[in-house]
Length: 446
Image 1 (cartoon, rainbow, N blue to C red):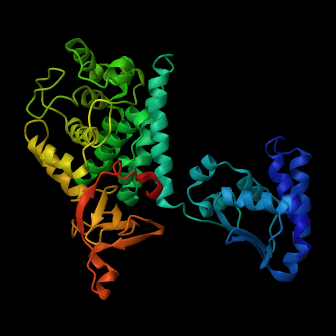
Image 2 (image 1 turned 120 degrees about the vertical axis):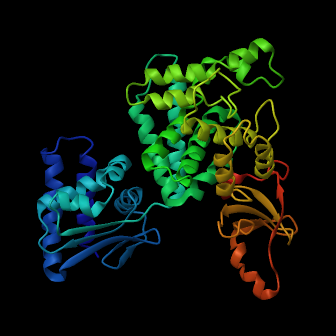
Image 3 (image 1 turned 90 degrees about the horizontal axis):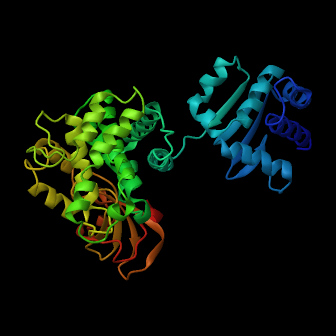
């Protein structure tokens, strides 16, 4: 459709001008006016016009633009970057409404996220003759972004502690709320990320992992969303004081000397001091919980503490213990999830709150999400989602065949309803496998 080309060019021109000129500048208003004038006769004939992305191709009124003309490529990218799958413009559209459309097409991802519902945003701007369809972001992609933001936040705290420019506590709440939203929507999507090892960034990953476990456990225990948030904050911030411990001690591959161990034991106190610098948004309960996360259930541990422990602290201790054991570190081997659970069972009522531990183990399931397992068919599979009704039959992603060859396309299988049973094959898990031994990159499949 030859009429589309000048419309595209003017729309794109207006979008680009947003970055360089103030709102009423002619370089911003004139392209909108021209695009509006070009649309009017087409809308008079048709009543509505559709601009869409179909299978990665820009399509205007059913006509695909397969060529690589710059205007088509850039307009398609503008839509894709904002996850816009279709724009429908109706007869009677005004210039003011077209200006709002340009605002949407020039908006950054943060602005798009802040609008939440694009329909409500358009309505708030009195736009009634333009419809925009935004595709929901894949939950696992959202989980990766939220996890990455949380890790960067911990990195910022530890970096800025040296300069005195400490991030504010409000940001900690925003990060924790993002983690909580994912857990409430699809817990497994976030839980799987906790098993992705990053040897060089252990401290940052560990902090986020414990925040995730604390949020998930508090939610499973039936805590209110507000109380679960406090548990999550305690988990997320519990180890920030390690930035004040020399790296030589933190990463020492051998046993610590008595002097080094005393130094390591100061990190909860240092964490509490850092939290006090983050402003009044960090409540006293969080500071106390972070201070006491190494005080055991029987009140041994450190620092010395004779008062009752807060539930947020005891929840953090469970998550901290599990993640510490299931992550490779310079001074210890990595436990497989099932091994770690067995060890933690022996710590019940001594180091860890017995009820919280029982609920945590039940929540993880017999084979936690992210575990690499061998099936009775000799295939290797990654546990992808838990099955509360049958803990030994989770959903798995088969990644390797019986002969040790990677599948071109991993096969998602629900072991509880395995379709292979119709062929007389009943898949089941027979063992867990160390991904390092088989050189399997879990991140590739999670």
